[in-house]
Length: 220
Image 1 (tube, rainbow, N blue to C red):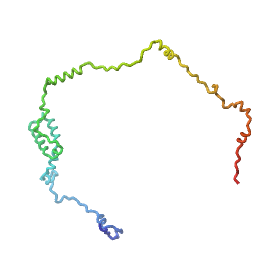
Image 2 (image 1 turned 90 degrees about the horizontal axis):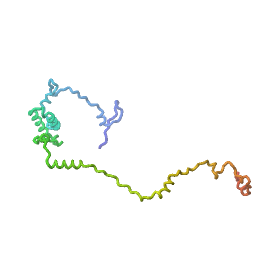
Image 3 (image 1 turned 60 degrees about the vertical axis):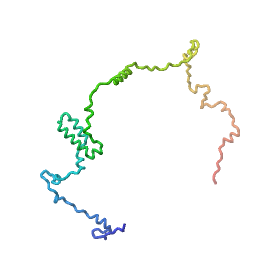
Image 4 (image 1 turned 90 degrees about the vertical axis):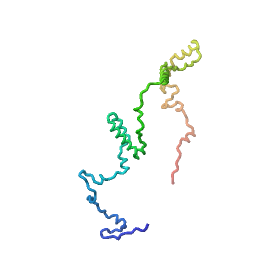
């Protein structure tokens, strides 16, 4: 890239600006659509070119409804529509199958394949099916099994004479402890009262020496 070129400051814009920014800053001219040169419009408001135009294949494919909608319509009005109208719906389904959207969605419908729901007929059970059914009924009709818990394993039996001492011991009332205050106990010592031996105590010289406070030297 080369060096950017700048325009010289002018009286209206006394600043240095690059030429590209100066060109981009010029406002664009507004285009007013007057309709000159456009195709004519018919009284209904549709342009003549739109009526004479040819639709592309992609737009034509996108205009077809989904195959599922055709099937729902066909099943809902199968007994109400005439054969001619049902044939017309089948043609529309065939036209929808050709589109690329139906192939990409993997929803192409084969009309030659008959509907299995309509062709299915009610039939009776065969002997093998009846046999399976009766075997199942006999299986569930039997009495319900009772799952009893296993018996408890107990110890050896003892005569009543050997059990009476233990029974008497258990049947007696327990001895409850009698809680008293601490001051009522024999070992309690009142902290307020001074022992009598302490009043007769004679202090020794060694204890006096240890009890005297130390002399703190003063700073000179």
